[in-house]
Length: 522
Image (tube, rainbow, N blue to C red; front, side):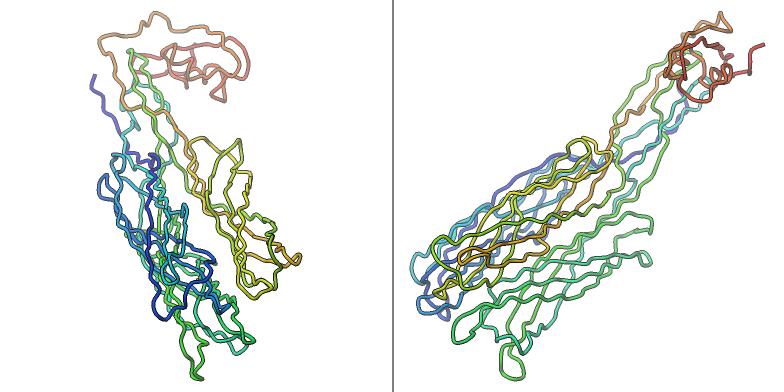
């Protein structure tokens, strides 16, 4: 039987899994002539950054930059030297097949080893693990209405992302930073950590205004009291940028994630001939994701009062609006120096690695490893790096968590404070910021098609049936078994809700041909 129907096209973003890739990092570095010879290696770091990415069908291509930073000391100086080198890699990955694929990339340093082959030559071996989370945006057709008098229809509201908008723009930050007269002049920069803070966004005439500050925490080498020393500094540089996702509307749910692509600090001589200025050239990548949600009433069940029919169902994954969260965790630890006494602490910082997120009951559990670094000066005047890895775990309540909810989490050390708790021990306090979004996803069963057997009809030898119902039994299920309409049963028995309040006998009127109900039986 051919019936006139109305169908709705529903889009859903479904996670399709994750891909792990490993990129080896190898560097055979010969020191330039203006660097002193290597006497003692202090530490080697590798900082990976994704410069760009592109999805073409089922293939992902991206460019990875690995910044290598080597800290060492020379034989006749206590000044900490810093050697930097950037390596670039172009990679591809095969994605699962889908109608429209998206990919999120997160590079993490796996390990790094450095050795001095000679006083002028350094050999670095390491690896970066690239985690790729993939999602597919699929479109499915579901029944929204059937225009046939004898058909009884049951509907449920379904919320889904009707439209997704994305755009990526660069934010260039350029500023001259002044040290001030109380600080010693700069010899060279040893460490530079930059991240966006205090970010806000506002819809302006079809565009999104993003504002924030770039916080720069740096450590530079200098001479103080005739000896090598290190000075920490913190700066904040404001930035703003108009993002232009095509077709953006004010009611769209927008999320902007800013990452630092590069931050270069170059010492500059001031008017007095001293190096008390730093020229900062930074690039941020702002990724804007906007979701426009819509709601449809879709059929979840149907039957005919005249003919037998067969319903075919399908599963839809409904997704709500991403809900942001932000949590703080304070971690305390001690870093001992087992083979000497400490004179002072230059700087301390923390990095988060092996971050995992899990859901348990109505809680979100975030755990990982906190890598703590404290740069100190030994009693001999030589700089030294103390290191320690400390596991952490944080749980917090989140209502209505489901197994298929999508979590996006990021964690970083927002602040680190320290003090010398003894002649050979440093106490460290780190404030971890954990932020992200929870997108509630729930599978629902809806109808994809209904087939009516027109050549067969239900028998109509009765105008009234008696039925003994049980408490909490659905009136719809009773009507479906008796080939009548739910409204007729509710009206005939003065029911005000769609489930039975108690056990009892019901009058089941049989609807007239064509699916009509004539009112109370006489």
